[in-house]
Amino acid sequence: MTMTQPPPSLPPPSSRPPMAVPIRVDAAASRAGGGDGEAPAPKPAVELRDVSVYYGSFRAVRNVTFDAPANAITALIGPSGSGKSTLLRAINRMNDLIPGARTEGEVLYHGQNLYAPDVDPVEVRRRIGMVFQKPNPFPKSIYDNVAFGPRINGFKGNLDELVEQSLRRAVLWDEVKDKLRQSGLALSGGQQQRLCIARAIAVEPEIILMDEPASALDPRSTLQIEELMAELRARYTIVIVTHNMQQAARASDYTVFLNMGEDRAGYIVERARTIDIFTNPKSQLTEDYVSGRFG
Amino acid sequence: MTAIASPVRTGSLRRTGADWMGLAFHGVLLLSLLVSLLILLTLIVDVVGRGAPVLAERGLDFLTSPTSSRPAQAGVAQGIFGTLMMAALVALLAFPIGILTAIYLEEYASDSRLTRLINVNIRNLAGVPSVVYGLLGLAIFVIALRDVTGGRSMIAGGITLAILVLPIVIITSAEAIRSVPRSLREAGYGVGASRWEVTRLLVLPSAAPGILTGTVLSLSRALGETAPLILAGAVLGGFSTGSKDIVEQIFGRYTVLPVTIFDWARRPQADFRELTAAAIVVLLVVTLLANAIAIYLRNRYEGAR
Image 1 (tube, each protein chain N blue to C red):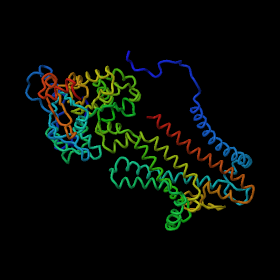
Image 2: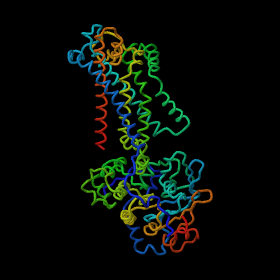
Image 3: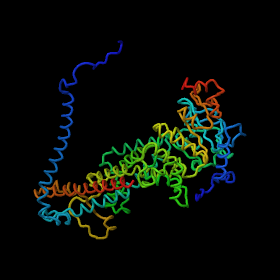
């Protein structure tokens, strides 16, 4: 890979992970080779500690603690209003952009609190990328969509190569390789969403957050996105919000079930391996939700 | 069967009667359109009909002669020059300040009580009659700052016009920026762009066509203004520019097409009526040209994206 990393200005620099590919490939390989059994606790990519998010005086999420293990897919499920998206956006400080939003608690990334006063949210978002509910390509060409992130981050290598590699990883290359100069908005919805994934991948994040990435797509495109996630897992840590329980069951390794409390704030009911959540939940609430009895 | 009866299960599908109300509404709409078109057409036919002979007879001479009290020699050269210079001064002064203010208000300022107060007052300023801005220009740029501006000078008039259209530029630019969807900004932030990068690379290109439309509308407005410039020093009647040096001209005496039209329209000689019509035709052409250039620029910009 010819990618040069942006200067590590997220302090302290020594705590920044080596983003060398082999380590992550190894992790994925070990998990693929029987990692689904009783394995030692997986290394977390991001740890939420007692996180609460407020919009003004309204508390949207209350005291949430969970880990998202590295090179795994963690799904956040729960009924409307349970704070799934809010929580997801707390992980890369996207809520900072909403006037009046405030986050309490700690989000630990390689041991460092992302909400510490000296952390630059822009740097955070370079390492923790995001794919949104509605495909939102830039009104630019397919090529420029993917190249946007590397360009602003001072990428010095071969941009053509990086664009191709990102589009290949997003399983979009074969469909667009002959029309890279065409507008990204001319693609179909499913292709647009994969373009957005390629755009996120191009800045080489360690974690990719996905906010209901398939909810605006048809079933075929949804399946493509899920297959894509399974491939990306080898290289990235994925946290996904989904309304679709089948999707969580099919595509994720770990599931966090959130519910809306009496005070209308979201809280965690249960967090476990996906298979346990769906077959052997500890909480009656979880069982009711995953079996479709409420929500 | 206990099915709920559908209200239109039986009966023929043929039209039973004419929709009179709908037809009447359609007619009213068409009539409104025709009335405005007719007024515009009358105006243009009348002005062109009276002005065309002068333009045909005098030709280039009318466009290149200075104002004069003798109708046979009077021309609009100084008016055209003044109007074009006003356009340049407004574009140079009002556009950057106005657009930057709009960016600040929409992208940078926090949504505080002060910001809202400022927003409301900019809207109020846009509604202030233009003659009031003329008085402001007279008091400040013509009288108080006469050592800097040279008194009744082109620059004094240009600054006055720039202040006049500034609120309009701010409002239209801010609206164009506000209409950029939040998802586009989030997409930019999501790949690690800073606010400056999101604003420069994503928001402004998307808002540019709207900003351009707004600024051109404000420019057309500025080019048609008469009253504030009469107060802010535009010359009624003949004058000699004296110098050919553009800097000296900016700080010297000036007039603009609307002021020339006003001047000629109130003169008693019958010949000046035809000259007035001809000058109006010239002003219309200048304004339409400015609009055409802006539309061309906007289309090119939209096409490039």
